[in-house]
Image 1 (cartoon, rainbow, N blue to C red):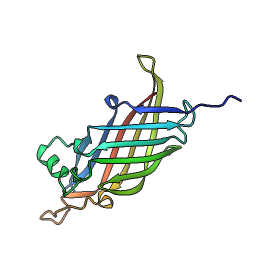
Image 2 (image 1 turned 180 degrees about the vertical axis):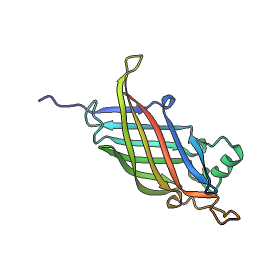
Image 3 (image 1 turned 90 degrees about the horizontal axis):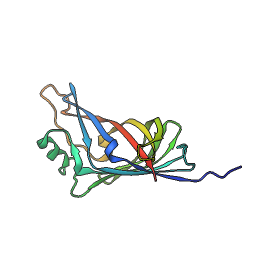
Image 4 (image 1 turned 180 degrees about the horizontal axis):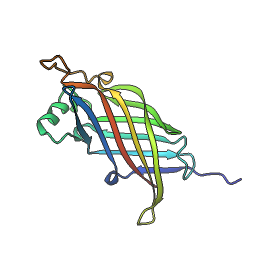
Length: 174
């Protein structure tokens, strides 16, 4: 029986996205994205992602909600405190359709689990091998020390607690 060799995959940031949504005033969602990130996946076999380990880093100050004033507020010490905590980190393992691991935001680390939908693999136009995943999940921002809030006149929270995560990741085998 032929021994399988390990493979290293790098996130292609030009073909990937890291997005989120959060409820605003209990009536609508505000969407945003982190524009600067990098990551690696390490597989046990060349083309099988089962058991792959994942290491991902987001630059917290790359937050963008298409509103400069809100973005500055979110980067401040009231939320992400990007001066003290410049990165958001995730280290996990893919098992079946779940990516489970430790997410660190503002120095607080919690285990989370994301739905991982393998969207396919193929050869890129320059002969490289590529693979894609759609990742989704939900975290409670307060679990990570993002606790700032205010109430509306009707008593609803200005900023919801649940954050929906939505990522499209394209990997290139090294």
